[in-house]
Image 1 (spheres, helix red, strand yellow):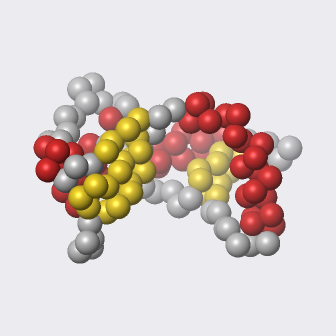
Image 2: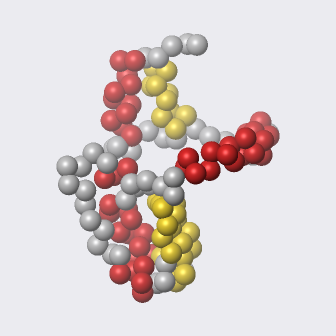
Length: 125
């Protein structure tokens, strides 16, 4: 799928996904790491098996916290809201109706059941 390699990858899955990405990185590629959701609920997190690819392909991999950029949020909203209003950017919400559906919706996040942002609507207001 990546005949020329992956230039930039946003990592928030970890595990087998990260291993597959490392094999397919382009020389000089970059990986921004913000999370590893596949590892959070494991008793023993899985190790990454293809870290030598960072060396062989001269890949830069760096972690960051979203909170480091909270000060930029107002500027982001100013820029993004017009694009959403003009439908230049469209987002999808997968809504689970009622508190009784919230747990199943959360579990579905870890199996890929949902499409887009998962929301649990527990009240109309």
